[in-house]
Amino acid sequence: MNISKERRWIHPKCGALDLPPDLLGPFVNLDEQRVMTVENGAAIVSGDDGKSWSPPRKLYDGPPPGVPSSGVLLHTREGVLVFVYTDMSTFKWGWVDEAGEPVANVRADVWTIRSLDGGETWIDRQQILDGYCGALINIIETSDGGIVVPVPILLYGPGRHETPSYVSADQGRTWARSNIIDLGGHGHHDGADEGTVAELSDGRVLMLLRTNWDRFWEALSEDGGRSWRTIRPTELDASTAPGYLAKLASGRIALVWNRLYPHGKTYFTRRAGQASNVPASSHREELSISFTEDDGLTWSEPQVFAVNRETRVSYPRIFERRPGELWITSSFQGSLQVKLFEEDFG
Picture (cartoon, one colour):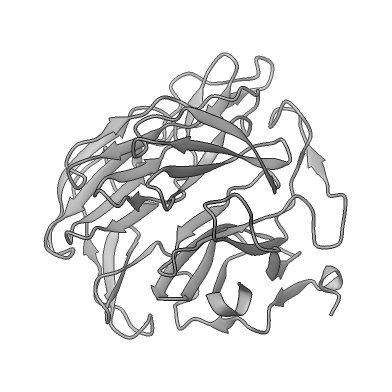
């Protein structure tokens, strides 16, 4: 089949998920039977792989600021649930074209909250970023019990996005920020943005960063995300959109992302202007998956598994429901819910 001619297409090896159409994660396993997500600021649980869900339980039901909205969710090995989210109750955005800068005091603050009892109650709600955050992509627990989450931030002079990580060594009770990975750029969608992380086999943490330079850049941390000293371009071609890394039960790392161009093509519409200092590919019509067995030194041949040329498909998530069983959703533009098996695409 020539997928370049398909308007909407899902790989025949993908299966459907029994989820409500608008339920896109993030998901975590509470145990072998139960899955949890946070939807509209409330925790819901399913014991039948998403067919039915419990009544919602609000994480926080008080006044602004710090009202939970979209975010990333983690269930640690000690049984602690950690939710890191943007506070949209105080959201403010504006961009001055003449100056090429954000308006003063733009806001998309980042907060965290956690649960010690499986989501029944939530405690330690706190702000960790006072400023503007782009999209939060993923959150991980490292082998030594640390928690790492990339938090893209908006900088001024010139206006651009760059990325530190926030790290917790005590199961989400307190947080510290790393150095900022600043690759320059100028524009309201420029810079080193929207990172995704995975732990490597030797304990280092890998971050892949969205850029406007036709490929992901990578940063490597040797201290659990507390600092980033090795920062360089990768060979992974990518459009101006984030990818998603997931360390799988097999030990391999999976990556889902929008490649630089559609399958079989060598061109796609580029944009610059106020968005970017350089013209960047805006391709978001296809999602591809690839795997690495050697900590990102090499990757398997990318395989397209989803196409949507009508509303596009981007900002993917990977959730390993069971070893080798991947639930993949996308949360921006054209929504997507598919199930695929690692062995079919590896």
